[in-house]
Length: 138
Image (cartoon, rainbow, N blue to C red; front, side):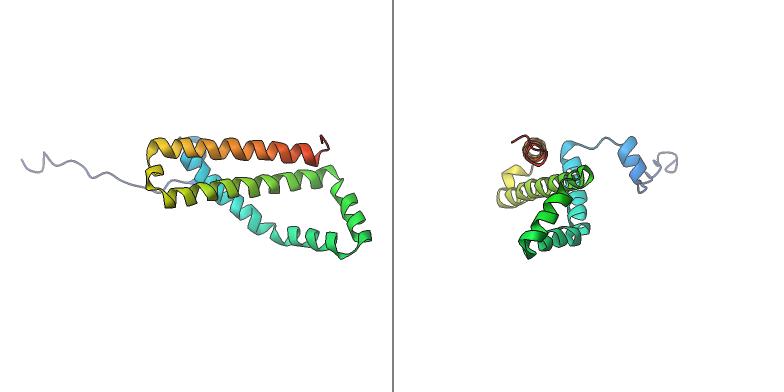
C-alpha cells in the first residue's frame, strides 16, 4: 500500500538554447540578464577592432582622415552602431546590478521588472541618439 501512494519523482533536464528562445517565456529581467551577457561578449570579441580604430585615429591627422573615410561606409557604421548598443546596454545593465547590490529592496520580482524596463528604455533612447549622430541627423 505504501508503494501505491508514492509519487513519481520529477525529472529535471537541462534545456537548450532552442527551447529558451522558442518554448520558454523568460521574464524581462531574465532577458536583460541574457542581453547583459551577450553585450559583454560582443564587447570582448570586438575589443581588438575597437582598439585598432582608436589607435589609427590618434596616429596623425592623415590617419584620422583615413579613419573618417573608413567610418563613412554604411557597413562600418552599422557595426559601430551594434557595438555602441552593446556598450550602452551593458553599461545600463551593469548600473542596474550595482544598484541591486547596494539596495536589497530592489531585489524583488516587481522591482526587478521595473529596473529591467528602465534598462531597456534608457539604452534604447541612448542607442537611437547614437544612431542619429552616427548617420548625420545632427
